Length: 128
Image (tube, rainbow, N blue to C red; front, side, top):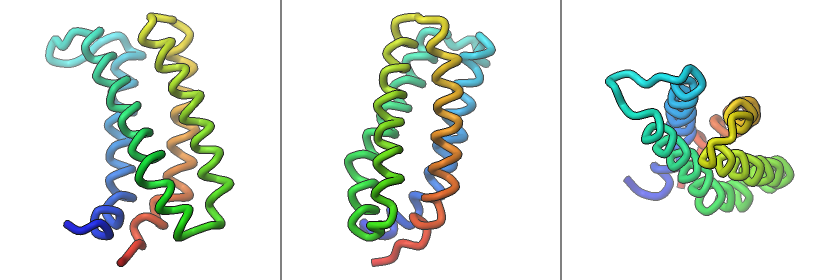
């Protein structure tokens, strides 16, 4: 898979990643994980996956989109601000702050919906 094929699939991949992260967060909010997985380990896995997802967007995806679609710069700037807010909430979750998890859920859902609405089609249309 070349660079452009990777990004062409990224829009769909983004939706699937968001769904997986939503499921993981729902497990944490409900206080249980199927299969007897330790909740602390699940929390760590969720926080790590969310952080890696946003790092990939900041380092790889957003710069490419800004170069190809300058009209998205302002929106991508807001998404980067969201990433900073989410990173702070993730730190709170890792420190067992009970309010951080519900705040993270609200911010994350709004953030994901915005990305899905504005970026999925753009990413899926990218060709070399």
